[in-house]
Image 1 (tube, rainbow, N blue to C red):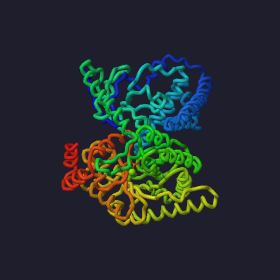
Image 2: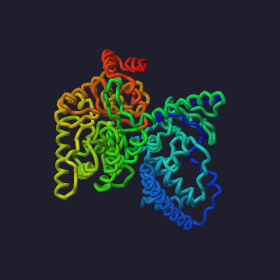
Image 3: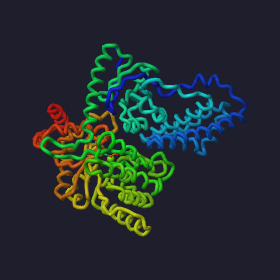
Image 4: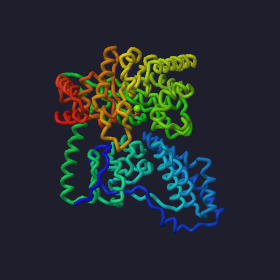
Length: 573
Ligand code: PEP
Ligand code: MG
């Protein structure tokens, strides 16, 4: 019998492979290393920094040429950590202490990593792993360690996987990912998601039961991991894999079919993306008919300064063009203006210490005060609109005034573009995320002004129920079927439709097939989700009538408890 550990399945699919433990231990190499004089060690360290930066540059160019923007972006962030002007003096100081260049490099980056690890914010804490990763990369160069050759498919496992490990492996070599920490914002998970690699996070200390080379079966749906499975267990999973393959083939057939009910009600199924490459994959591989949420803050991450209008324009234009290439559906690309703050701070935008970052200076609140950031972004989106259909969406809006103020910036951006003689689209829709209870309650009023609503349930659930979206201790309360949440959603959709506007959803709830049918019955026009979820939602919609979906909704709205609603919906599959 296999040893079993369990985590949280975040990217579904069954993976079979041998473990590749991320995070090679360098201790024995460090002991064997013979340092020379301190002067020579300093010279070697300086040369290593230059060489590693050069190697990273080459990899970045290769990834960019292959359209792997995410990987290129992460390595670019790593290159900046290598070229950080303060690092060489920190390394020299460490050489004065230990006398060894590789050890000094590791110690210098470790010191930085520890500072980041102390931070309150999950995003910054997550970046500590990038620092250790970079330190290790340079130390390995100094120690002359080559990366191991990989035979067959591997399941990459680690407490906190270094992003370069995943970024550096070709997709066809990675069967799955296991992460000790529970973070879904870890770079490793972000990459796995866009590549649809089955992933389990949050296995905690379970990770110590896994050794390098162990054969493992991982279920990205249930979060189950079988270490050294027996023949019978393999056999049982082989059945599941066969079913999965059948399902994949079936889903592939669905790719170009519409998400339409048996009696002809159609819903747009679109993708949540963080880069133009995601849009390309979503359209080509999963049949997305557009993008319902381009999280533009990803364009701002991994950089040392605010990206210029021109650089942003290139990214938005590429995403808009990929959406315009769809053969079915609208091909709309909804670009959300930067949602910075909360769990997504940026090193170059000072927010200051906040007791409650999720209730603090974030998203549209920053944009409205920082014209220097907001206008270039709006101009870039308006320009991108020329190449297809673009929409602008403001995050975290709580009242009409914010929307009107933001809209004025859109007008100002148009005036500036006209004065500059730049081409821009005058047909860019302007809407808001409904992710605060205030916006949902005021939906009948807001609907008069906006072109559309997109319901952000990730935040709407947390703010409505006062349940932190990332707190595992109270995750049992975080339920998008809670009647309070459902009433706000229904109100939002109906308010939009009453004013002749459209409503969509881009929170995680949209990827739940059971939720999809009741949302459709409420009158939602578009559901936006991470692309690999599109086929299963489409399948559900194509196998039900709109009449039946409305009956189910009526019953759901009578139930008084979120768990009961979830259970009821699970029984009617
Ligand atoms: C949401 O809140 O539902 C949403 C889609 O935005 P994010 O997850 O980026 O906060
Ligand atoms: Mg949100």
